[in-house]
Amino acid sequence: MNFFVQRSGLGDLYDKVAAGQRVSEADALRLFESKDLNALGAIADLAREKKVGNRASFILNRYLNYSNYCILSCQFCSFSRKKRDADGFELTIPQMVEKAREALKLGITELHIVGGLHPSLPFSHYVDMLKSLSALNDGVAGRAEPCPPGGAHDPRHPTARLHLKCFTAIEILHLAWLAKKTVEQTLIELKNAGLESLTGGGAEIFQPAVRSAIAKGKESAEEYLDVHRVWHRLGGRSTCTMLYGHVEKPADRVDHLRQLRALQDETRGFVGFVALPYQPENNEIPVKAPPTGFDSLRTLAASRIYLDNFDHITAYWVGLGMKLAQIALSYGADDLHGTILEEHIFHMAGATSPQLQTESDMIKAIREAGRTPVQRNTFYEPIKVLD
Image (cartoon, rainbow, N blue to C red; front, top):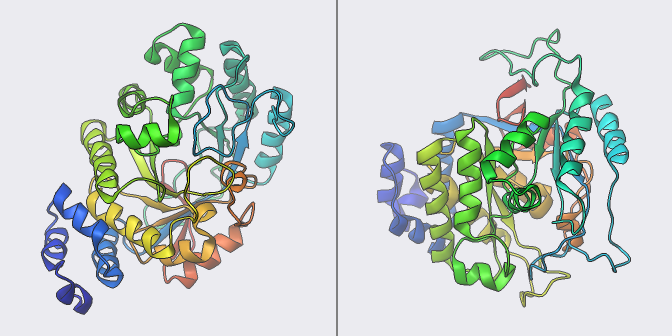
């Protein structure tokens, strides 16, 4: 057992992880309240290594925010605008197709598409959007192919195909309302139009009082989880998130992770978990500073240890900064997310990270952390292993 773990009082949790036993909610609360970051890192690193070995991944992706006009006014959100606001925007479908075409030329494998709950666009607009973007893949066989176990990707298999990862749970509920259909019927129609996976955004914190304080009027935890449940039952996959570092308490984080772990037990449809550090600028929540680096590493470590049915934990460099995300690879994370190219939501809330990372930047950061870089697809399957 690691020296730091021995003196920390967390040795029983190390033993549980080593034995493949599940930690409890009470255990998770101890992790979130611990001040011994070295011990947390040692336990999380053990859990990570048992899951993925020495690999750390990234994806070549592009963010597309189709509009920031939104009928909601979530207190934490710095992204949404009303039609009267001068800095509101809305991309046309041809504009989105052009951005996607540019991404395809760069070898991007995933389009990550989210926006606000637009006040006037009809459901047919979203169907047409998906069909138009999906048409760019005509003539390209299959999805970005995973490489064979232990080997590099066969260059004869094309990887430059755009996977459409679109919409948060609240967007799906909004589209179902527009279409006057059930969530299941809406997801089926979107899937037929080209939707390939759901994003995990919008989870925030599930505890009702906290959720009301930061996102009054947004969907409930039950509604968020049910959208993903239905999608998983249709054979779809998705990611999930937690927004931390605002007005929630450690027990609220544990409750949030408990509900995610329970749904993963039920469906096995989540491919990865992304912890999102709150950004404090340009919104209505009275938080003066973003989460500290200490708290971010502790959150990632505790999430890795508790979410034992998740293979992949992402350190979101946009919110953390690349240097801290790189360190997070020794605190339970095994993924740095993607190249992104163009990100609005976190930067409008005050994030000072770059707008993009190059493929070489990602590879360099992972190698410096002592991990083997892996270019992955949306499902965290390896496309290329860079030994």
